[in-house]
Image 1 (cartoon, rainbow, N blue to C red):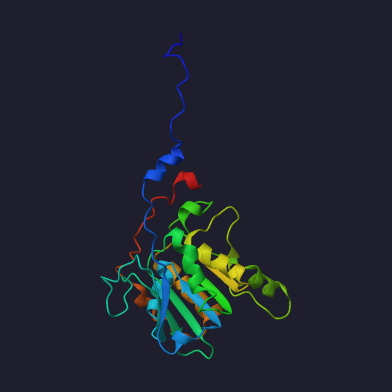
Image 2: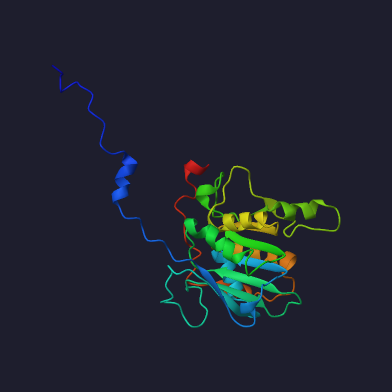
Length: 269
């Protein structure tokens, strides 16, 4: 007679993955889309440079630029418009597209003031690059994420690094008069990681063979990093553009006293 206490139990009627068949799948999110004003609604934009501001510091800088015109917006259906002000505000959850008024060639700026989830990053990058917007060059401005950086970060130090697509680096190394967009900025340290929308946008540039540069700065907030970005833009990207006075960059919404709990942790040394 079999011993019911020591006998190997029979297999379960279901595998673990089969149990999920009884759970209804989550509803799929609506597809994001672009809305443009006339005369941009019916044509493909070919800006000489497209600047995509993601970091809080870069958003502050371009918020203060008066010589810009709103020409379109990216609509993420899961992000409500309620709470947004009629006049442009840094507190709005929006992703607006601007053109600069005083440029001989079309220059476009995209201010990403809403949080784009990682699972939506590739969909958004395809909308912003390669469809109705096909730029000659792309500059992405984002912040260093402390959890993805291999070295210890200090609040007393302002850092800036870059990553480039192969076409951007090839022009700099060709020796035919080409130059890197941010020629004096060091490359992002090996072993550190970039993810989210910024990584998806740079990968999209690589796929489409667009000259693309991702600029990463630290810290996220504070006058020092704002002045660094402002100087970089004036010297290497948009010479002559008025970015506002230094005193204009104090904003209660972006508190320079904000602290990242992961900074100075021994885990990231």
